[in-house]
Image 1: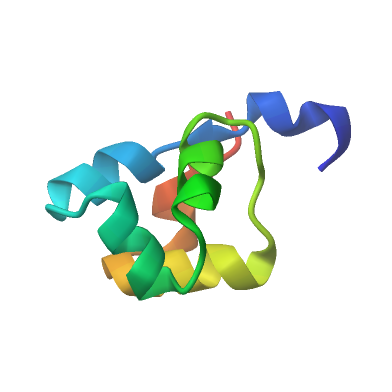
Image 2 (image 1 turned 90 degrees about the vertical axis):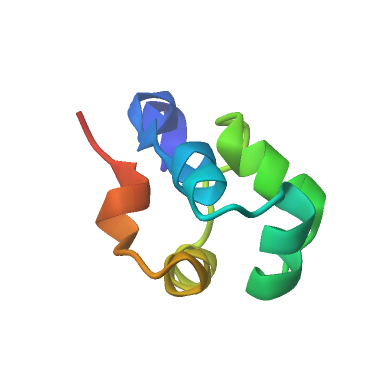
Length: 70
């Protein structure tokens, strides 16, 4: 995403918590490390399309619910 990634709105933490999942539980279900989930939630890492789709499927929502442009 280049230098514009900081403008990406990220709702992962809110949606994950609403689903009652810890970062660890989310990471197991999405087949990624807990550190990756943490980095995504903190805006340090922008997930690949494949990972964003895995996360959205795990949480039962659309990718657009998790990540959006202002």
